[in-house]
Image (tube, rainbow, N blue to C red; front, top):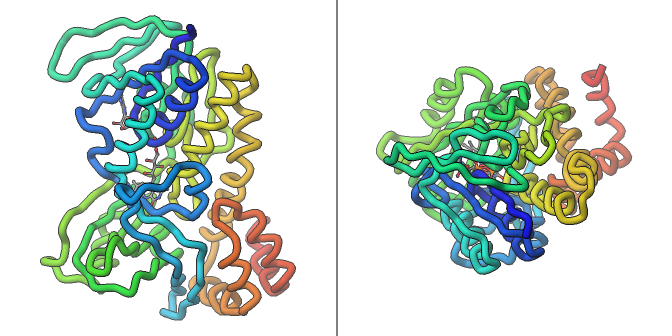
Length: 361
Ligand SMILES: Cc1cc2nc3c(=O)[nH]c(=O)nc-3n(C[C@H](O)[C@H](O)[C@H](O)COP(=O)(O)OP(=O)(O)OC[C@H]3O[C@@H](n4cnc5c(N)ncnc54)[C@H](O)[C@@H]3O)c2cc1C
């Protein structure tokens, strides 16, 4: 039986573990933290496409949202009916995926940190212990997040480009609408967790703390803040190396994150499906990724490059155009996981969008 060692028990790692164990592989997952899902560094919103990938459970879907409000710099906005988005309790979601994988026979080693490797041998250190165990394995998967130790250990040498995300959970009565501010930092958001609590955050490549402080100062008092969370968001890099012989990178470790919104849960899971196909059917991993997720991630990246060139006037013009009922309909009927379809249909419905083509060149 072929042995697979997965480093990292985030959604990408546990999802992959479950599929491979189901196909007869002997799978071990090594997670440095004692508890899966902690510390939480995620807003936890996904499109409705999640239900095609994971059986939804009340234990981790804590809210559902069907309306988004996108703001422009002059406080104008467009309201869009969206297919039901899910707001997850990330810790419970990660825990659910772990339990599902365990049922398929995956062994989880919590409090076990990957510290290095040579070819087919990984070195794992147990928390609070100096003893390092060497483990022989056939496949090694780095699903170990943005600062992947596996990528470093095997010298993948991918570009280190990140945004820094900061968010607060705050007490704030709300109307269950997702607010999105595409011009603040790289982007900023307000995501309702319940009628009384929202997750409000900012992602930016620089000055994130100041942008975050300014963003929340406008709308909150200090005593409304319950918790602050922060983390790195990789910038998608289509040229990132994701495989070296029997070593693979997955999820944030492979930079699989939508550059327009920072969404990495669904791309990570799609990446896990691609990697499972590759290992089970001995197919090229990169080709599988291209089929399932890379094409859309590239369009998100191009859209982000274009948006980074926008002036305030451009944002205001875009939001004005988006108030066209035909565009609102396209935005409400399509998931942002499939952004290519949104762009093509929108340009056909509203040729004024071609104004923004000047930013491509
Ligand atoms: C502020 C913020 C908000 C976000 N909001 C959203 C959102 O609303 N929606 C969305 O889709 N995405 C969001 N993201 C992105 C999302 O959190 C990630 O894309 C997602 O968690 C990636 O999953 P993963 O399994 O690849 O990696 P991770 O979830 O990062 O899991 C990696 C795991 O590897 C473990 N690990 C790391 N190093 C080692 C080691 N040496 N040995 C053993 N274990 C190790 C870590 O402890 C961790 O458990 C957000 C990110 C941030 C920072």
